[in-house]
Amino acid sequence: RPFLWKVNGGQCSLEEFGYMHDNKLTEDFAISVKPGEYHRFGYETDGKQIRLYVDGELQKEISIPYGPAFVSVVTDTKDEIIIKAVNFAGDVDPVSITLDCQVQGDYTVTLLSGEKGDENSFEEPEKVKNITVNMHGASSEFVYEAPRYSVSVLRLKKCEAF
Image (cartoon, rainbow, N blue to C red; front, side, top):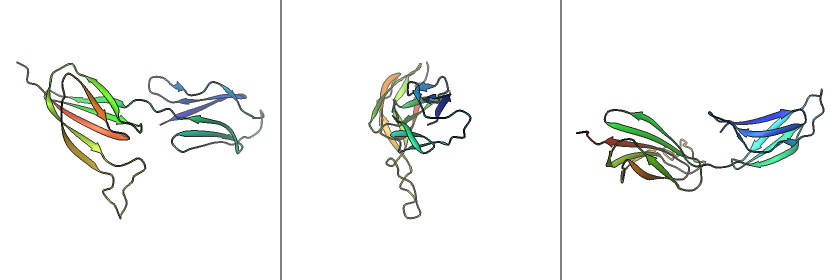
């Protein structure tokens, strides 16, 4: 996730960069800088906290918020709707889906499997891979339980119009 550290004189703030608007994660806070001098800014993160440094001195430690799953309808054809859902959180996230058409109850979900921090290697080339599962319960309004730390692609078939 992109973050923006805004510095203006001796005041600064940290914001999460967004497409529609930025989300301010801190109120303005003072940092120790001397105008006209070179300063080295840095940060480190473990995914849960961001630590901001100026000239090697810790200035602020900030918790990274986890929001609800990000969902996007990426394809809407005559016969099918494809929905992508990304859950950044460590808990299952119930995602309410509302469609402007009727869909069949049966649908498929392709999931990127694995735990947070997993990666493929020569020893375990399929530790992280896509799996496809058949699901039931889709309708024009339904709830999809996005697994923790997951990327899901839902494929729903539209009901035939009469």
